[in-house]
Length: 122
Image (cartoon, rainbow, N blue to C red; front, side, top):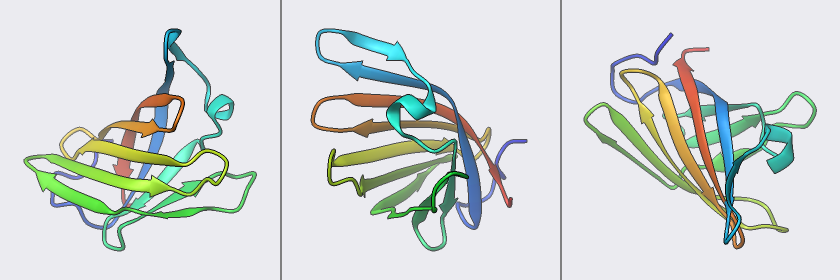
């Protein structure tokens, strides 16, 4: 079920379907969530501008969404992750029409390209 075609508000649940790790020289390769330490599901609260990891094995982690812009049927997000070992930034584009989620996470030595789907109101 795609996300609602209305303005970005409320809560969306997003799950990754494909994750690619890209590093210098070696290029990109598909990897599983646990290989790159990502939760299987993210909860996006557009009203509070907070992203929450939903990992059943660990306590949820809240990350502030620093910037959020709606343009057409896309919602564009940006933020800074909390990870002392490997500081990171993230950006994402979510289609409010289809629910498709495309994102990138950048660290000092690698980039993750993420594709997934979001649904609203869960």
